[in-house]
Image (cartoon, rainbow, N blue to C red; front, side, top):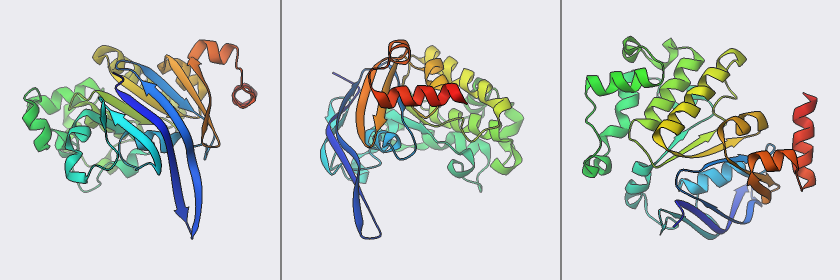
Length: 257
């Protein structure tokens, strides 16, 4: 049984009275413990695919399952088990962290979920637990008293990672997790992610346009173009000998930078 599975998944958006297909008839299975990179240009459908996996978007056709259970059509109150098992790190920590909450409360938020509390293996949001969560991502516990605007961009993204990992999820989805950061801190955050994923044996879905980032973090790559999966396979194999012209174009664009 795959951890996450899309079967003939299609996603359609409607804007200004016009409908367009963002993802078309995608079938993809991700196994527990796998590290998968989803790559493509802007508007290719890669973020839409990630949103389907997390139940943040309902497919217009097809099915999406998590841990063998379909998540299509579930009401919000029925999604607690999914929210407790899957976490997301978004591109911009400025928009993903509540500016009115101190860092300690931001990181502790997932631990207050009634569904997580029923799991029995999730710790209470004690100062010791929060200190450990901060230290685990390279943040000094003294920073827990601060608000997001009092932190640097790298510190804010580390806080977002701490929040995503504190509940020990089965799946971590990272959507362009370093693209909004200064070049000087990108490597630090990427290495942090790599270490945490490896040590926790997490399933990782990384959405990125940066092939170097995918090579660093992932085992398998899925190439999305115009809403369709055009190529997939082991990262080294696909990047060394791409079969599809779109993959070759992505590689050429990377090499020309």
